[in-house]
Length: 562
Image (cartoon, rainbow, N blue to C red; front, top):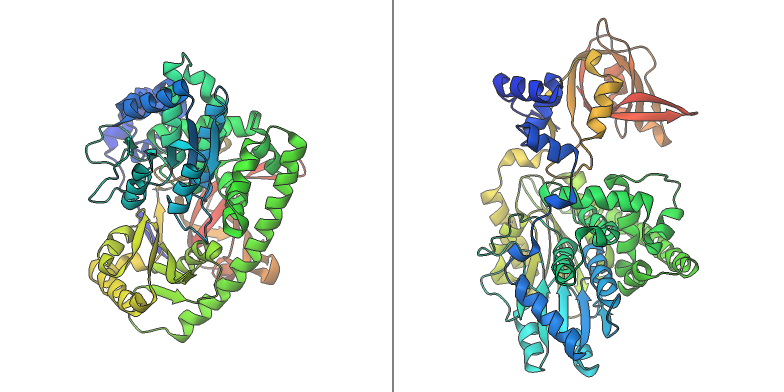
């Protein structure tokens, strides 16, 4: 692991913010590192307000989109709400369809079949709209690259509104409106919305024309927060506001479908991390193992008994998903070991029988293991499909762009993407991808990095500091949980391995003159010898609270030891 300590801001800046807020230097330093330099910015950070959200009409084509939907409602057109099969797509479809159907009945939903249709707007989906006399499609979390498909829809007399957040290509589709803040000529102030976030801006705009305020739309923010968490977008700016209030809805008054999922867990209060690891995988499992429409049905259900039935079915999908994920990951790891070449900077694996629904998860696991930009391929119809995952600091989308002559289609983000290619192009692509990455990646990015916010003394770790740090939440990209480094540590003699195979580390650490604090290091069981030596050691950790028998105590959540 590379330990990288973030540069400490100028002491003058720390002093000014510390004085303005009445906080100590450490808290002021953490805030400045997050771009917060004055009282007003700190107030907005600690107390997000819904009135901090931007005017939706600042987004390019928003007025066109609203006018076309109003026209459809006024003349009684049938509207199809279309979205991708992952969490961002299914929450988007649930949000948009539920909002429209509050006042307008002629609305249907469509999620493409992952295996028969693949990602994005499909010709089959357009035919479904045509066959059912639907003259307007609202496409969510997809569509920005659907040039041919939207042209096909236009030929059939169907208008399309695109609500997307993926990077546009060199050509835009001929849609009635294209809502995507990543368009170069879109002046919307915040560029990092997820697909469901763009959908929320559209209902915010529609609502404003119908006399609704933002307070009338809070009930939809559980869906938006779930999508923000699942899609790993930055939790900064507008996303922070949406996630903050969305978590409140999840914990206080979630929609029936999300309540049914929460009821299956033992959690009393969910954090963004809980949404990522508990709620999102279950919603995703529907599209991975069966069909994404199951997730939409759950998220739009208003009867608790029926929602609980849907949630139970999705839990079975998720159990099946976990089993497949583990099996395929092991097969992929063996394949990498058997074909490992010295100096190779990418991992590319393929098996025609691997389940398409879990290759993205497998790619993530391989990236964690070997820390290389990774592609996992499987057979999809007469083509090969892959999920791509990257390492911190490397833009895998740009790398794929450098190989686009080998690809049928691709799309995604800096750290995650999807693609298809012809089978005969596989070896050519594999070699070209390795060449492009090796020529553009900084070698240091091939070692996992722990980014450390600040060095800290053990006696600075107090309940008051923990109370302040909890107010930094919700955490995520752009506002990660603060990570600290302490030097010259010793264990009280308590250190031991715990868990299956003693792969985790439990200890009690102190510096000379400080009170000991308990620590837990998941997958750090191999560091036990370092901790038990007489020689002092350094550790990187975040702060956590441990609740045991009704007693809450501070705890170090250890990341690494040396």
